[in-house]
Image (cartoon, rainbow, N blue to C red; front, side, top):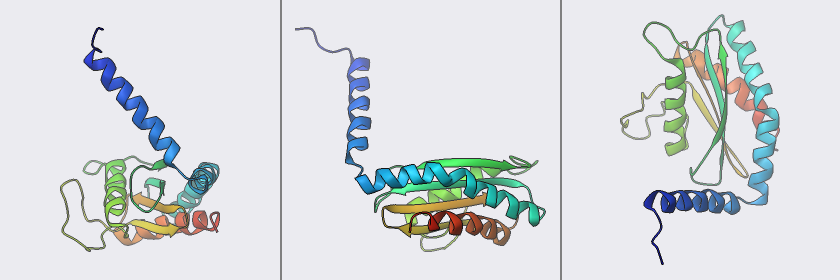
Length: 163
């Protein structure tokens, strides 16, 4: 019998891993993921309106993490006037806030632990526990307090869809 080509073996492992992860989601988590997909754009539009009301530009994202630990997430993003400026990449900063929250399960910039490489410790991301996991919202483009207000606008509205 001829051995499997190493690349083929890795591909099979990746497919098995993806399939296994998909199977381990509970029915409640799968339903929550569908709810997230249904309402994510509306939450981002609320965040956009809040940013425009505050006369700020930037990038907003919302995320759903199934389960009690971060193993995966799905997300949606919306640009509100700019992806960045001369010195800042708003997309990268917003995702850094989410990465910090995905590990700490606390709002970004919470200072609950030492900052890790890849994190900025910036205020502006909000997280909320729901029965099937966590919802996150981040905004980047203004001061931390303004970013947090925009994030909360979308997160508060979105989390109501899971009650």
